[in-house]
Length: 194
Image 1 (cartoon, rainbow, N blue to C red):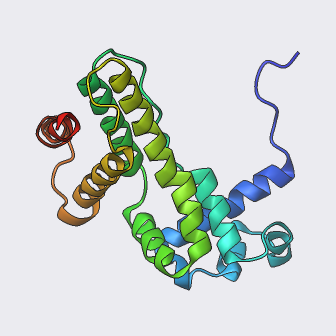
Image 2 (tube, rainbow, N blue to C red):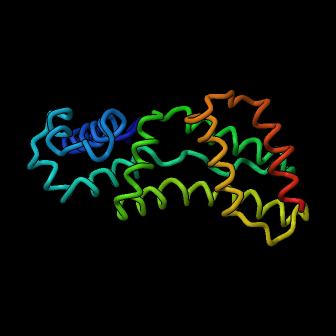
């Protein structure tokens, strides 16, 4: 019987090095200027190794995003209170955004405009996941009778993401607990109860 996780194979370590190099280069030079050659050099892997696993740059970046940029937000444990649930989700999203490199986020957003496959991958693995978290919290609140059942989960997710990303990347204003509470109390909750 094993006491811990199975040791990673050489192939798994190589794959992780390649994907981490991909994320680092995305942050440093952006999607357009990132190349398979640069990834291979950074990961100390051959281009053949990369192309055996991923047929092109979009697929490689897609896998890196799936693995390392996916939101770690999860619906919080049930508190019985919509405000507390929203605050927990917002704090979790803030922690996830703060842990990511701003250049990486901007690079992905710009690259998504020109690459439909990359955009689909990011949406499925990052944005849709956030929407699922909000949907779970709002469904619980609706079941308790705190909000109407017809609440627009997608719009709420979009508003929250936009505000948090704007604070992080554009205005550089505080994204502290005081702001999160003010945002929930003056924007989200009134909108949900309207």
